[in-house]
Length: 332
Image (cartoon, rainbow, N blue to C red; front, top):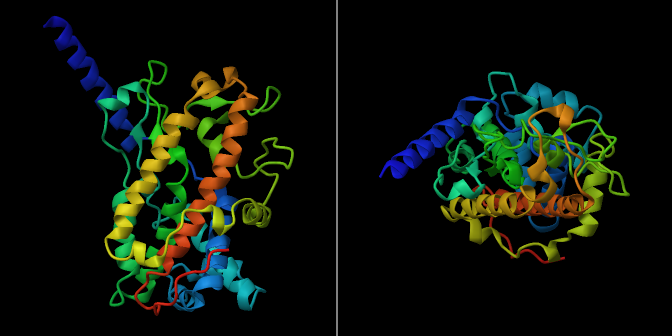
């Protein structure tokens, strides 16, 4: 009985400790700006192929965005399809661009569940990504809502969908080394290579799409256009999960989104928090180097998740009520 009581107190302490993440540092920007921009570009390309009417609806709504000056400045000098495509790129990154402003909603970017062994008794999630995906999608789909409010919601739908395909936005680690969790890898440090500077494990994943052709990690090595081109070759639609907009209409989108989050949670458990990642240090000075085996798993998985997010974003955008239903998409 005494051991049971002790165990209960430990479990309760862990629950309270892990809950602290809700009021502490949030996960960093998933995929970085260039990764999010690539997701917007790929979603745009899918719409251009399958449902260009959706693009016209979104461009019209975005003209009323409350932060339109930011977009206008970034779109200067562009016209036609190039301007539209860049608009989608900017929409996908906007929720990160406005951090620290009145538009900022830090806890909308993640929905974390502990994926360490103790996760079996800590089944709750921290973060509002699931609730806000549902809420923002409902607003984006509401033809009676003000155009500016729908435009805000569209940016969040693109961004949250992208964020939640990054495994460390859905799963985080608890251990005696990280008694309050590792905050989704934001206080756990590693080195991509032995001679590299230490980075957060979360940052290591966020910047996985930004890498040199030979596989070396470099957060500044590539840009959105290069990531987009790589994913177009490596992950054409034929390799992605078959689906049509009809599968995401109404509340089916909410159910599907939860499944996407669960995919990321599983990948956090089975890939992100395995091998050399478990040696991550709370002290940046002693950050270990990641193994080649770990990087060889992480890089292609990050590409796959970003490509899947892009395709799913395009399908969601085709469910706006303003968009006339067209034929089923032709798989390429």
